[in-house]
Image 1: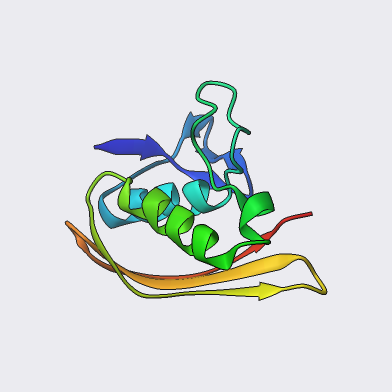
Image 2: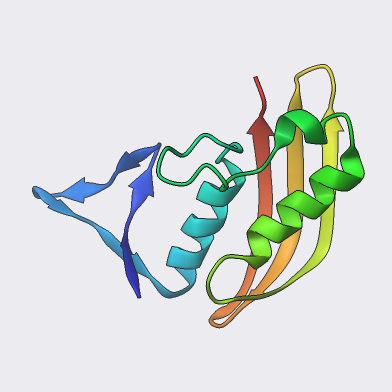
Length: 115
């Protein structure tokens, strides 16, 4: 499968044409998009996204919700060494994980700003 590359929240282009990604780069892009999609934010499907608002009050729920989003990505086989660190001062959440995919391992170290 192939997808359009996203850079800095914009569709990437070169010489007037879209840049495409596939394989492990496509899965990594889907992971980053999933982690940065807030619950009920996507107009085409209000069930998608992570409920960070409720999750800040209940870390067990947040861990479960984030893992569910990651495991729901096509070609993700398992999520290992998963951890979440919530910074109350900056209202940000650091998510780290090793993700086994059909194409190999992806290391995630993503900081999500909730404000």
